[in-house]
Image 1: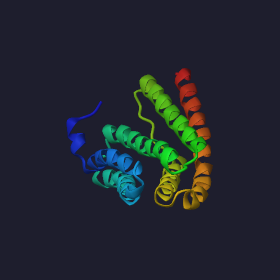
Image 2: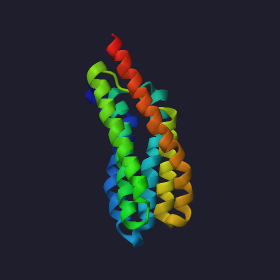
Image 3: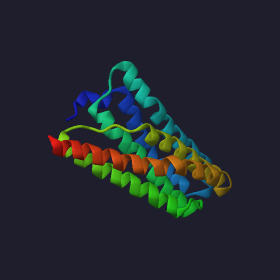
Length: 181
């Protein structure tokens, strides 16, 4: 499924770095006096998300590892930050629950598609927009709490909810096409 050399691709190294920053982000999120460090760690981590894909495409190093690792890293970072911010910075639990449910559903259904078709499904544009919006909301909650974070969360909720519908529709279509074979 993966070649060992894929772990050395710069884009995949960036994704692994994002995962490596996660424990520090979560640690700092638990400490009010360390919010700025949490903001920096999360911001750097999500910056790697913005640049790893373009680097992979420019270098011709789009890999199976990257296609699996990148969305998992995104989900782990956003979901765990949402849980921690719900515990520490008044990030609404309803938003955390929706985000977690969406991401678990995407992973489970994506695995089902892979099992049946040996094909890795890629993110849709609305999923990428959701990641950007939720990242902005979480960063704002980290640094300023609900005062700045809540308005961005409401904006990010639109593509979040739309992405749920579009991913479910896409899954149904892929599974229906598979059954027709």
